[in-house]
Structure formats: structure tokens, C-alpha cells
Length: 128
Image 1 (tube, rainbow, N blue to C red):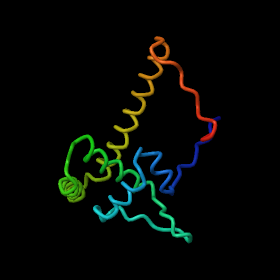
Image 2: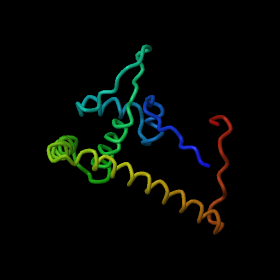
Image 3: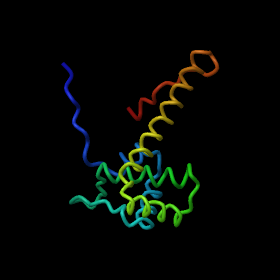
């Protein structure tokens, strides 16, 4: 019998950076540019992101980096999604696209290792 893993509801800025492959200063800058990115702060004053905010961050990343929108253009596109009720779907789709991209990269790395084109990488013991 498999037990469902609980879905993590809150994330630190470090966890969001790891999930989105973005630097903390980029997230902080986006918070100043997109009013809907407004993470709560815990008692220590650290940012605490909800899973919905992580999805929105992935949407912003997709619009800026893949679709090549300007910040103003991304704001307008997100507002359009909000007005038409497509925001949640667009954010989830952006998250899914990023997951698929990462999986494709991992498969390419594995194929290159199997073909002998690239030596296997060893995990860094200092980060484990």
C-alpha cells in the first residue's frame, strides 16, 4: 500500500530558489514588480511562500525567460489571465513545462553518460 506524501504548503526563499532555479535577489526584485508576489514573513522576518505563489513565480519565469515578455508585458499577460479566469491553469501549465524541461535535461545527461560522452557526475558531499 502506498501512502500519499503530504504536499508541502509553505516554502522558504531557499527552497523556492531551488525549485525555480532562480537567485534570491531575482525573487526579491520580482516581488517589487509584481504585486501578487507578496510572501508572508514568519516571526523571524523570513519570507514564507505558499505553493500558489511558487506556481505564479514559475509563470512569471516562463513569460520572461521563455516567451521573452518584458516585465510590463508579463504584468499585462498575467492580468489578462486573471480577468479571463485562466490564471491558475496558466500557472500550473508553466510549472509543468518547467518540470518537463528539467526531466528532458536529466534524460539527455543520462543518455550522454550511457553513450560515454560525459563522465558520470558525483554528488557533492558538502551539500548532501
